[in-house]
Image (tube, rainbow, N blue to C red):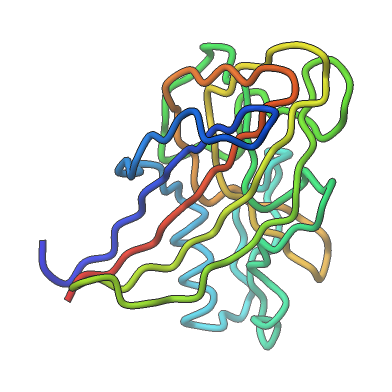
Length: 196
């Protein structure tokens, strides 16, 4: 369709030598949850009283407050920080995507222990023209140093509210099972696209 914003995800998997062994290609994301539009409302209106949304602890917290829009919506998590940015989970077969999701079913934690993956820093590819589209990519790589296989079944983006350190889920996708063997890396890319 002309003139709309779409979001896609792409999953890349590399072996221990850095050779690409799987590329899903772009897959349409159907994952926006209600907190996404709540933050847009707050950014657009600079609401007073402040706009609240359900955070990842299932509690109502401020997502955007009056005159505080510069401190909300951060997804630029550093190496080792699994609280926000692109996050991944095992889903455990618990639930399908729902527009009222507020957290991943079972987030994979950062680390090198059993069931953990090393979270690398979130990076960005600046908005750019790609044919008739304008694309903006957000990506994060995960390294398996756990000694075993970990199967990724869900991905998402969590934003950080830097004023009172609350976290809000914006996107959640249940994906095809993606086993990540020890010493392999997985890269998740979310692409936001507008089409002229």
